Image 1 (cartoon, one colour):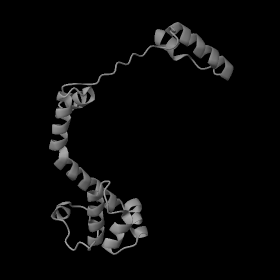
Image 2 (tube, helix red, strand yellow):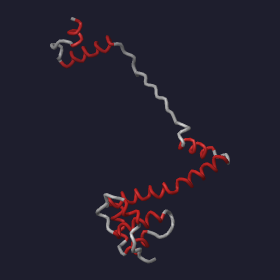
Image 3 (cartoon, one colour):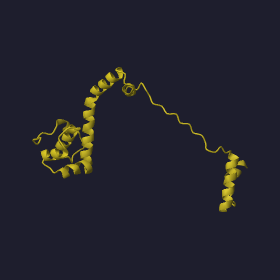
Length: 154
């Protein structure tokens, strides 16, 4: 495998990644294109003229490298989106219920709703709560201070 010498034009469009070297961009592009096919990370490193260890450092420790791979992967996914939707639609028409569900959800025609009902564990009245507060105050020796509820009643 020959070392790519050109930086992809899309790399120039992604701003805010000044710390990426041309070698890093080439490695990132090869990783993005990899997707389960060869070349291996060893081959990518060899092609880029770096060690496999250095490539792993890029992947694990360099945030700009990680962000670049993430952003470029999104671009690639967006390019494939029409094919994905077409395939899903074909499967839905063929009777695949899960595919039909995904198509409808992606179009906003099927919403997943969850109903949550909150009920108190113990149904207590205000009077019961005030009695418990008084008991706690007595235990803590705070009975000397006036009760806020009593002050409001006056």
